[in-house]
Length: 567
Image (cartoon, rainbow, N blue to C red):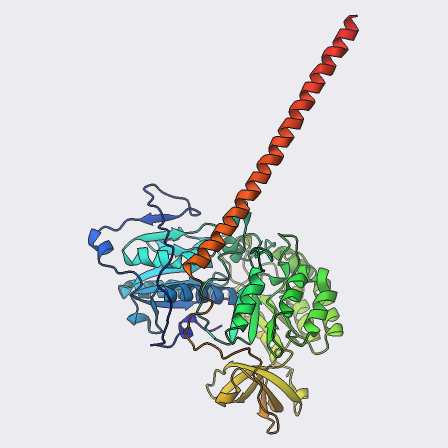
């Protein structure tokens, strides 16, 4: 995943109203809990009076998953809408917003180093993401402003206060009627890293308790975006419609576990997907995010039908992590190897050509050589075209971090051996000479080609012709590699744009809502919460009334019984 600093060209025009409904967080004079909001007052009064909000430059950097990238796009959009200028060059910026990932040690180390670099350069630093949410009292975060993973809609407030010299921490959860929500509104303004691709987070958190995972400490329990959160339309579907109206041709659904969507609110992932399919323009594509095996097992039939749909990529990321049931048990993964194989076999049989991607952790503390060989056997059986091999990293505060570790040399040895297995086969050689239709959405790493994807989300490189970007292009496969194919455009076929309109220039604000729109949405949500409270009070009053009548009836019966006994 590329960094978010690439999302805006230097000097791009950002045009939007500069008014907003400002809610200033209150000052705390006592020590606060991590879940509370706090502001530490600056030492110098002049620091607060010399700042004109919305006139400074902001540098954003992101580590981690597509969910984090989406959060950063929303933060960039809100800051740009308020007048801040998003810049690529960090040393030109007045404030750095660093969005962190806690999955692996290297990502956290890079995050720490960037904080140190910002402080040494005399920059104001705001941190966000999973590292700061999970451990806000870490020594290296002392004195820094923090934006919680569910508080990205308050980024402007945090940046303003930070520029004044205050240290602000917003770490609370979004709740409605006492129930955790998916997060900030999906209808907030954003600046897309890629104007052709919309990333929509459908839920946050998960239902698992994996023994090695630190992300759970940050994202918490499952919180899904309701499909009826707005009175007139569904928020997820509304965001998709809005993105297509801005020239987007590819939508990614993301979360910590997409397959678990809706289990906390009584709906399912297929229900959401069928609604989304209805609004995807012909030729545009939907890509599903990562799903753990337990939550797709219940929906295999429906999911296979959805992935056969021409507007949905036949691609699914299902992490297995190990080929040993014993190791999976110690990882608290809540499925067996046979259940994972059932998912893969069923989808391969019902969706011919489907791409299944998976993850492996090498060197989990309880993994024996026999366990590792089971993992090698599984990967050799399926020959996954996309296989993400990771060394085990003990994340502080997780149960696995307390386990006796396998020597690092052996962990690296197993990682190397599994990598050799992965490199031993070439998944695309049989496709040489095929004619395929690919949707071209981004620039290749070599800067000399565009990247397109076919129905199975396989990467196809095409010539860097400006007329191809954002188009469906017919190609003949003339070269295959380990991770890609290269296509030659068919001269007799003209590129077709599936988008409803021209895509936004890079750096332009998407989906900007006026202050009145946001205020009206907040009022509607508050009204729904008030009505839910009134309903609870009425039910409680009715229960108390019935209870009182029953008690009185029992007392009357008791007196009558005693009177009869005396007589």
